[in-house]
Image (cartoon, rainbow, N blue to C red):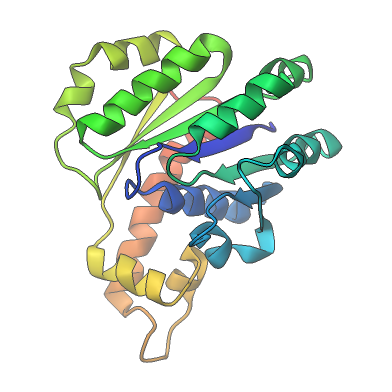
Length: 235
């Protein structure tokens, strides 16, 4: 089933691009057609890792953003994946609302799905509250608790914001922490997760047990992603 997936969180450093890369790798490994868009003007890390599947878009340029909607309507059998840079929601929301995107896609039975990536800080929780207030039950939500960026999500679990999210049918994913050294090496090599697991034999490639840890991490993460992407996730 097709969908427009916006991967964000507003806050910098919460792991938005890592989640975008994981979703992209899931699509590739499961042979799900998709097209990606990278909104980060300075780093474009998503495009760096998955350049053959992604293009850049300018977040405050309606003509550039229009390509997102055109891509899904031109080929409704594929997924659209948009990696949102920090502090991009105001211009993105203006475009969504001025263009009537949610209702337009609803007419074609194409859901709009916001992946909200969080650390364990109050800023992430506050930004989630703003997202829920803005769109209510008109879109789908996936809340990603990134344990690579926080260890205590008690404030989220005990919050009225979580209860509101659940009332809107939000899915909640606990993203496990990948060993920091392995993640740094993958980033330094500009490697896709597939390449990290399969490339070997050089001084810079991951070692045997590093590759095994990445495989286990991907398999566990894929279980959660599959439930969401196949519309079977539960909060």
